[in-house]
Image (cartoon, rainbow, N blue to C red; front, side):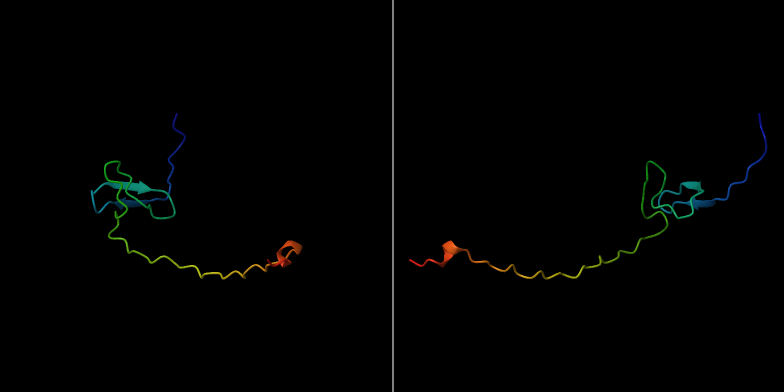
Length: 75
């Protein structure tokens, strides 16, 4: 039984590496080619490599040495 036509918004993509065409209904661009033989992350051209963000080093204070009664004895 057919109730009616449905129009779903989507975008048409094609892989630059293998030429595989597909339609995606996701809002974001796909990360890799959906072709099982390709799966290239560079389907939309070369990806730019980003430098990792370095976290600032945190200097912790040195622990305070607490003397006990046994350490006061000198030999």
